[in-house]
Structure formats: structure tokens, C-alpha cells
Length: 426
Image (cartoon, rainbow, N blue to C red):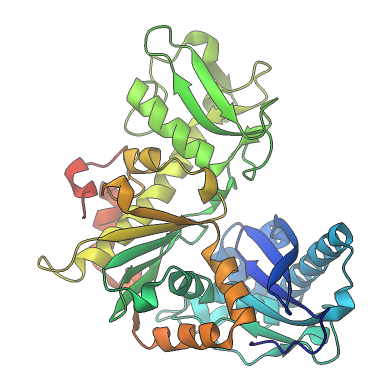
């Protein structure tokens, strides 16, 4: 194993540090059993919803504050997981962290300013193990903190760990891996080659930046049905009960259903077909009421954020596929990963032009490829080394260097696309 197990009670921690959300697993090293888990929003959001804002905050003297915020958040999650499972955090023998390049820099207190230069120049893509005690994290003396290496300034160890977890490093077929987080990271390839890129999707997929947004938790709207004759709307709510907010998967499902019903137009604006009793007006503009008291609503601004996010991702996918030329391979298999993906309505994601229109049977799903890859690395040095070996076959693509990317983005900035036939790539 990557982390040495000396005693039966020794524990390891796998961490996914995302721009918007954090998740961890506490694993008993002797048998690989998951004995604790926790999740939280990334507290660095107070310095900006995206990585560029946080890099700028670090450049203005906030690096130590950003590092401290993420380290303390991890401690809080560990305490939560330990309390729930009656665990002794002193038995932690080591950690494996997967995250995008900026998040890893900020965690370790490394200057991230080079990441946003052109060309991007991170301080490092593969940091040596840190000492857990130096980060203020619990564990036995000398417990190491390993970080999964990245491919480039905008493609980190989170996406590489996920792609290897999905079998890309051994795959014969050409496949697509899409992590629907704030950075919309994408890998296209197989065992012989891979192209990887990241597009700034923003936090909409994880409920961030949405007026009534929340994580995919109890009370979140995650689906909708509209009766074509009566116009009645029926919401699906995680856990049932009262509507508390709208998660990313619910936002996608709503946009697809509303568009097909004619309640919103191709630009995401509410139309005259929306029933009057559902229409709201406020300081955010026009909205569709989702709760009887009108406290939970879907605003046109939310739909605009979703359209920008889905356009960034789809344009990234098309750019990678098209970069191989007209005779290049199509998408034979696709894997979707992301914290909200367990509730993702695939037909809706295809319907709004977020994902390619390939047979749904070719799609697979991994709840959190980054976290699962970190966990596998924790338990297997061979897996951790396989990620490093696969990196030698990965070509990092900076979308800002592709002259056609902005044209692709503009074309995808409508529901489902200005050229719907372009959705088919398999």
C-alpha cells in the first residue's frame, strides 16, 4: 500500500478537494473498509467562486488565509467523521489528496500565481509528500500527505485519478471522461493516448451561484414533470417532503423539461406559455416559483448561468474530439463523474446540450472519480504509480490555445445548440 499499515486499527484518509465542495473517506487500512465519511462546502468560496479569484486573492497576500481555511475545514470534517464512527484520529497513518492544481497549491501554501500566466506555469505538478502535522492534521508521527500529480495548469490529479479509476489507462475503446465540477475537466482517449482539458464551467452544477441553489441533499429539487394538457408541474424532491432548494441535477432536469414544454426559449428566458400563477418578478428579474410560498424559485439568471456552464463543457468536448481531425475516432464510451451525478438525468443532460448525443447505453457513471481514485491510491501503490505512468500518455490541451474554442462556446450557448446535429459525436 502507499500508506504503511502497522497496526490493525490504522486508518487512512482519502480526500477530494474541489473548488466548490470537499469530501473525504476514512478507510481502515487493514481491510480497506470505509469507516467514516464527511462532506462540506469549500470555505475558500468567500474569496471567490472560481480558481482565478482565489489565485488573485493569494497574490494580494491571502495565501496563508486560504491555506488555513482549507486545512481547518478538513480537520472539521475529520472530527465529524470520527465522532460518527467512534474513531481515533490519532490512528491515521497517512492521507491521499486529489484536487485541481490550484486547490493543491493553496492546500500546501504554495504560490499559485504562475498557474494563471500564459502559458500556465504551476510551481509544480507533482509535489513530494507533506507532513500531516505540518498542515495541522491529526495522525501518528510522520503521517504523510500524498497529492495525486496533475497533467497541466488546469488539469489536476483529480481528473487523472478519476480517468484511471474509470479504466482509461487500460481501455481499448476511445472513451470520454467528464467531471462536472466547477472546472469541467475532460479526458478523451484510451490506453494509447489521451487529450485532457479543463473549461471554466462555474459552480452551477454543484448548486453554487444559483439563487436557491444547494447541494444534492434532502429537500433539493432533482427532477420535474409537466402535464402537457393541464400545465400542472410535479417536482421530485430528494428525500421527499418540503422543497428547500435546487441542486445542479435538478437545474438540468428543469431546464430540459421547461424547454420541451415551451416555458423557456432557446436563450433560457421565460415565455408567455408559463402559467401566470407560477411566474414571479423580483430584484433578480423573472422567475418560476417552485414552492407555494415562492421562497424557492428558478430565476432566469440561474438558467443563464447553467447555459454558460453547459456551453463551456460541451465546447471543450467538441474541441478535444475535433482536434484529432475529421477522420479521428468518435466517442465509443462515456463516463460522467461529479458530486451531483448520482441524481443526474442523462436524457436531460443530452437534451440541453451539456453532453454528446450518443446512445445512453454507452454512458457510465462514477459518483466521485477523484475521491475514489484517491482511495484506491491510498490502498494501492500500484494504482498511484499507474496514474503517474498514464500521465506520460496524456497531452494537456489549453483551450485558450485553440482558435476554434470560442466559436464552439458561442454555438453551444443556446438550448440545446445553434446546430443540434453537432450534439452527435459517436
